[in-house]
Length: 195
Image (cartoon, rainbow, N blue to C red; front, side, top):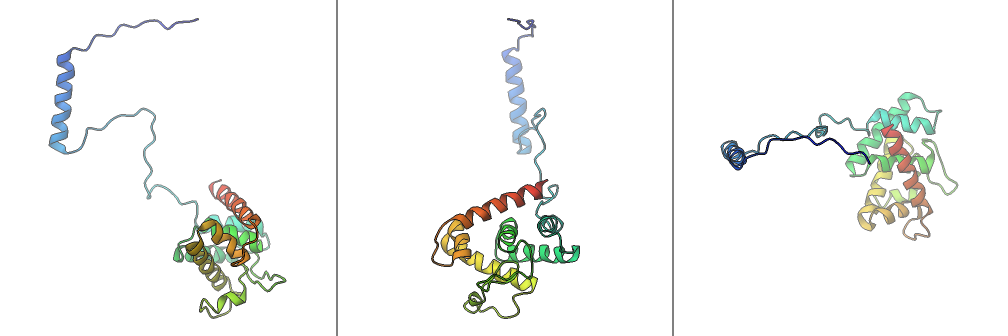
């Protein structure tokens, strides 16, 4: 077994320790803040100004474009802007909203289900009347707003997991496969946004 060579260091006297402590306390009392400590190799804490949000318009458009390569850049940007606007308005995670869009319509604005759901977020027309929403829910903005409103209301009333399930099933939840698909899509969205 190899041992490291011993090095001798000068012992620190009690008076030197006391003097250092008094100097530190004096500095603390005069300035009200402790003296700066050096931490070798520790990264500086990030501030909001220095961090670039991975969930921006360009990044969301890029994720959606990987799923639906037929959409032109202006349409992708329009969808991404709507995702950011309405996820903020209804206090939803934009990554969750993007994941729901990917699961529901594969980012196809003109998607229609055999049951009558329409648009990017596959909103059922019957859901619009009780929410007092009017207009053409096949447009990108109105469809995403309606979907975000429904999803946010479900989550508020039922919690996140059941709220996501109710977005698909309605009030009679009959399984959790949809939740698993949304969570997997959300994880993939998150991975792509950070790459």
